[in-house]
Image 1 (cartoon, rainbow, N blue to C red):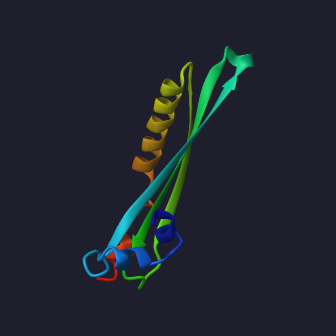
Image 2: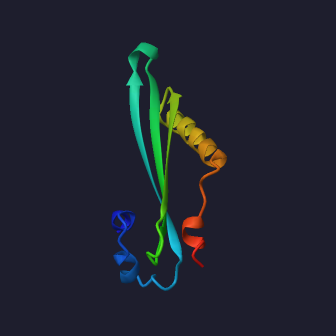
Length: 107
């Protein structure tokens, strides 16, 4: 259903009985990939991508989507992931174009 909604289908909202209860939903998907670099003392780098979408339930307006990518180094996957997450959070907090207007401006 998640992918169906991201592709613009309102079917899942109707099947779940949400079409008349919500203005919209915020969906997010996070992907993390790791790479190890032997020439840098086996430092692991985490590449993290976060996709955020605001999807109107009514389908009366277009949704909005943002993609953030961050890299984090560390000697373990956990440390590399945490560094990438911190950089991702910083990007989101400083983004001035991200808003929920996609679902609230029609009401």
